[in-house]
Image 1 (cartoon, rainbow, N blue to C red):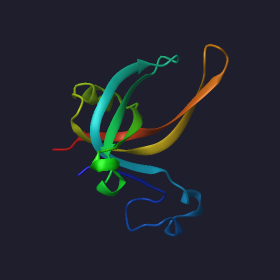
Image 2: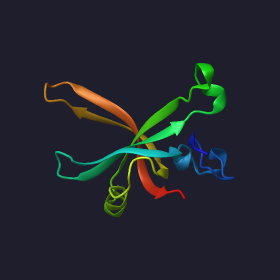
Image 3: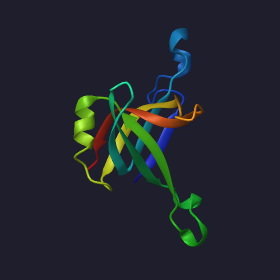
Length: 129
């Protein structure tokens, strides 16, 4: 079963009220779905990043007319060199689990404007068998 879970507290018995004040907020995301669109990018800084999408089927009660399967497509990226090398060897469609945090990135366009994207910055990606 594929699912997307974005929580505002850790997925454990610990809740934000149990954390010290400096840790009262968190962004922790768990995604499980099909891998798609893996590609390696060299940033203007020279840093390497791998971007990919996780495709998640919506639950039956959120499907379209006639039971048509609808999906959510979540943009992700990963900076860790060992994780980047591993994910680049996987084919589109394999089932993966992604753990990370939600972030919004901003950058300047060549025309002087700015763009942003909200995505999951993965700390761990693994194949689900």
